[in-house]
Image (cartoon, rainbow, N blue to C red; front, side, top):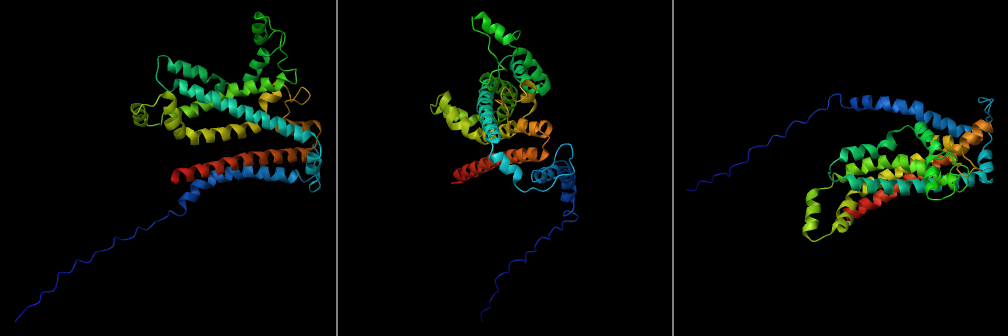
Length: 312
């Protein structure tokens, strides 16, 4: 007689009880509501109102009496020469600021990323331009650019160079505006890129040096790919901020001479407060907004392509 023994059964596993999220659905909205309300009241609301005004014939002396005129303001802008000229000045000014501001900021960040004696003092001196308010910086440079008593022309005179009309020449005024802008934005770029550089793993750099890579190769193969996302982001920030920059240009040249420094923002102010045409000024603002959105969209596309390339 044989006896069969049933195989031992595995003990029944008890599924852990599901966690119940009590009150989690409302808490995130409570945190989101204040900034959303702030943006709605102080950003999206005025933005929608500006877009609406661009389709009306609103005048400065009667801001509530505007009548809907469709695309009339835009047709007037795009069939004239003023908008094309302002767009050219804005794009060239923005491109110069991004190229020189980011380039100088990157070089400065690379120069002070390594510890050396007096680095804190050098960093403080380099950040001076960014810390100075726009109005104060404009007044300082207004004195330095003075054709008769400015320090720049005095230095040039020591070398036998004739006085340069920094702010009164259609050739030199855009260069002077670009110089002041780069002087002010490069420290911010340096600060952001310095943080990115200090996050590069030192062991990866050391491994590249052990493999025989020189300093330039380490920068090209290790450092640059690591800081590239930050480099792209800070370039977009510089571009958008430069498109809407107003104080420096208006205080130094007022958009002149002969509109050689008249960007979209300066033209907007002139249309609104000198021509008293709020509808046309609104159209200028919408064009500037579209330009900033295009730059942001290009950065987003480049970011996604880089992400796909790194995932492949």
